[in-house]
Image 1 (tube, helix red, strand yellow):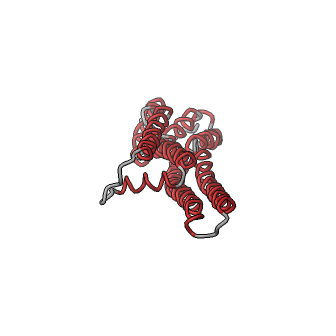
Image 2: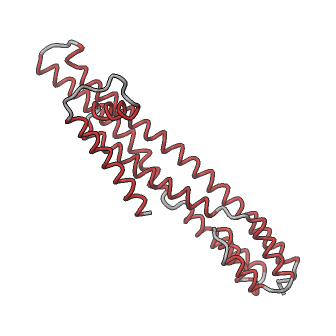
Image 3: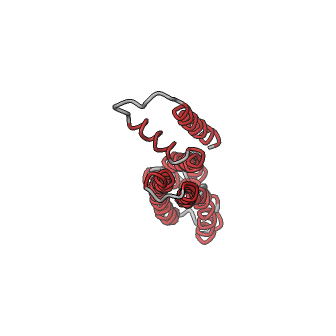
Length: 243
């Protein structure tokens, strides 16, 4: 996770450096600018020193989102196949073998079933209690990092709105300095206000989409975990594991 955040920060710093280089260039822009050049231009027009904070929110938010998506994809084990292998071992009376199957399988579902099998000699109530207790632990691990994604979703538009206020202050300062209310005087301040708001909202929308996808993945894993836990108790009972 730390390596991923470091890579994303390096990318962000490179983009900010590119923006400052573009700002320092004196030659006129190309007659047919690319989308990247247009994006950098608007980034600079919105005051790159302030817009950099919005960009950092996007970079860090995406880093947490990517880490969660990779982790959740690894955690999405085939529960049907896992239960079949456990059932095969329990039919032979090999509880240790069933536990080894869970140990060798990645994901929270396998970990929860392993805890249930560990309590097999204490009866079905102990198995259910172990599954519920460890299931809560795994649920917390699945949701790790979501609070940071939520934070960046909230901060990005706030930074945009702050830029709006700063831009309007700049516009009124210009009016007071020049003593004229012509569009040319206030155009720069209003442009900063609108661009910072737009970029802040875009960042929040992007991160919100990823956040909702991650939540749906977590819900799917939790549902599979609950179904597998119920099925495990039934499998253990049908194979006379409880004595």
